[in-house]
Length: 438
Image (cartoon, rainbow, N blue to C red):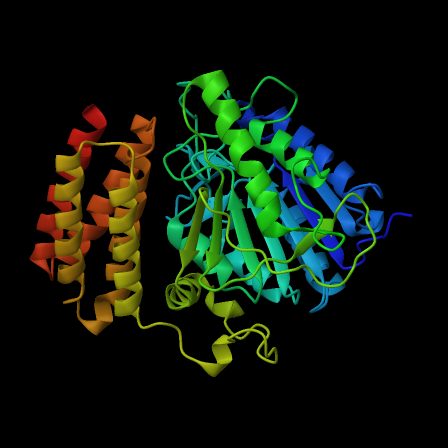
């Protein structure tokens, strides 16, 4: 007799259509959400209680709908709950420079998210932090690790989108204990659709949840084993169909342990999951807890910084001050240097020069007087946005020029008091121009 996975709560979001930009319609996103919801709630597989599986797609995947669903998840779950969060859709920087998930009702101006019409990264971090569950398995089924290409075709240029920033991923891991993240591809790669009704990644995910190629771990399916099952089929399918590489990526804090994400083919549980090592020969990455916490403190909106102050399983902001602004600038610039080093676009000489210039900009920003530190943080974030967009596999020229102009503007203002900032920013902009012309 199948055993219900009573601690399991799933929130599955597929932004498959846009009310304001038809070029962003991706019906395959909704199909993937429905397929995952079905297998999770099936007593013969995931065995989640049906009333604990929420799927949002099409007109339901609005900004208000997504935020309300996250609030409901926080209210219905407890410390012993397990949350399965799956997002399939677009994301991009807003006209205010903030990074946002794009929803069904998001508005756009010059291909940028109009401020407040998407779900900002800070809002999402605050909502995740409000969920008391000590086990959250997050999946971001996106392209360029944050950008879903509408056409899903080889060589297709995305109309809109930007990679999920590495500091944002790091911050997600510090929203509470037991956070595990899987992205459908590594930075610099593209997620492909395949030949069926689901993306290559979604096909592998459904098969894994059905127990195909996974192991029975005391009646449960562990997060690490599910990821291991995803990795090779996606790599092989994309290599065979498209002649390129797509590697699902696992991200955890150093020392993190796996946990059960569903029943194994509806089996009766036999206690807690046995320890599972990190999957060898895959694309897993461990992130420093100190860096992750600093990233969270940098992005958490001020109104939320006292959220959950009575919870012992988190490090609430009421018990410590956020990382100093100079440290936040250092974190942003260090991660930007890492992004440049790992990028698959741009020749080695340009990437080395960019890294040298980013180091010089970081040094210059550290000289900013206290009253101008907020402006220095804006310069660092806009440098990150400009370089991230330019290093996409198929960079959009309008996006590149827009992010470059915002970077130059903020650097020029700060450069009135710190000339070295403006000079270095212009050198970085010149290297980016060379990069996108090649």
